[in-house]
Length: 168
Image (tube, rainbow, N blue to C red; front, side):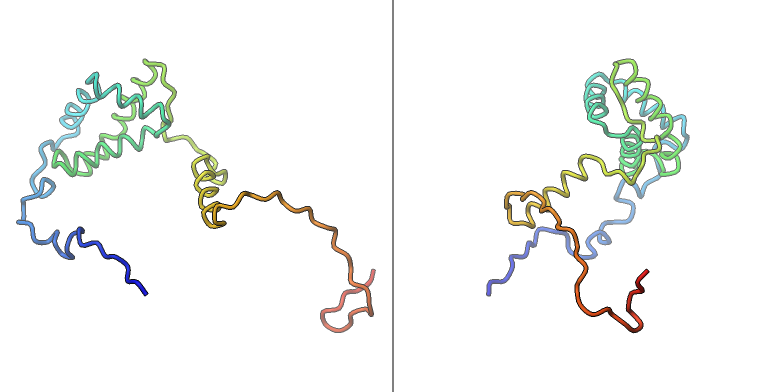
């Protein structure tokens, strides 16, 4: 029996507690304490032509604007730019700014605020399920579904007792 290979490249348990207190950006006072200051930081970044082109490509792929805005503000919190509460208050402004950019460029966008029927799986979920099913089957070719034969009632003496059926 062969033992599985263990990777020792990961962090040691408790390693995050060994850094000096205050050495991480999120352990320092935030750079922007007001919502207006944080907005004034993000708007020029959104309007930068190089960033705007990449952003519009991501929007065109169907990534919801709310997801993009949330990712931007979480990154800002991790960099020590602002606190999480300021970031949450900045999200609607970022979404509106990206909406305006997409509309000006004629890019279809998903705002992320639409009510979608969650009972209907999206294409990526169906594709993933099909892939997993093929892997489980050992990459066999899918077989056509078998036609079901009509169920026949068993012949013999009538069943009596507690679980017996009544004849109508």
